Length: 449
Ligand SMILES: *Cc1c(COP(=O)(O)O)cnc(C)c1O
Image (tube, rainbow, N blue to C red; front, side, top):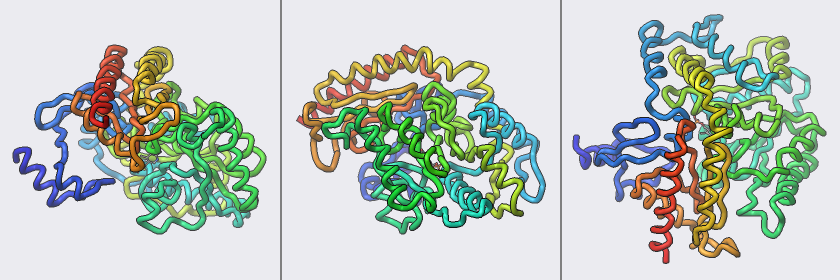
């Protein structure tokens, strides 16, 4: 099929995730045909620097034959076996071992799933089971944050705080939402430090309102990813930690984006010095090469689940899929052997921070922020008042399309432009990214003038 035929068949048969089908019908999909290193190539032969690592997945880029070969060999040896009924496979044991090593010291057990959404479903099951076995069945409510993202199953989308999603289904009734630590959008005249404290106190207020004895857990991303790469003010996490320590409430960190090195530490929890009870992972664990997710379980929770009560009546056919686990093992080995995360922390992360911050000078940029290999910038019509170009935040989409035209993949979240480039990016490629982003901003300013 040629490009036009592919687009036509796509329109006729493929329902895409998070897509306006009328829009798609008019514009047609972009057909991506190959990828190499930090670049993707489309069907017209355009080569784009991938500033998004696929969908926050391909931290090692697209050319790691070690991973694909290991998957292939595993599929030829034992393509599938389940881990129900007291059975197991070698790669799943080995990956569980390695995960216990690279995650925080108090986390030594893993429950495997096929995705991040499923892992958050698993978290809900584990939270309930934990409190029931502790004979505290009144602890039922899970607190989450507005504009957080935790996946798209009913549990994942209920845990998330995305209004656009909540409007299209019935969220679970035992989930409550508190303020997000989004200073640029909601901080008003407060300093970032003051606002960070305020956002953390909103959690305390909610706990008081609900009654601490009824609150089972608090779930959050260390930094909101899909919400727009919202890096909380420095005061936020220490204050949240203080609040949670006062009450007996489990902390669930959703590390689906920030796990496996994005901040320059193995996990966002390491970066912020947090000690979660449960930790969700997916995406980069296999470098995006094979679907795999899971949740790391702290010793405190694992003790209870493993020694009290009987069967934990939960699991997925593809929990601990051997080829997926093999992909995870090789990915983690590469991260370790090539000291990729240390390089982000010491070299490319600081370099990206310096170069990305230069974009704040641009007339239509209200703020830039970055950490490790992740960043965002806010498009504004007026820097001083932080006023947007229009109420529907359509400038982001304009900038994204122009960015593609200049050979760079950036994502638009409303009027925030976000990047999460592969961790293997060189400083030269960081220069290329910033230069292309600059040109896209110039063109966006012209288009919106
Ligand atoms: C992507 C994502 C999920 C959902 O993972 P899926 O594999 O798409 O189900 C959950 N949480 C966060 C923070 C994510 O970014």
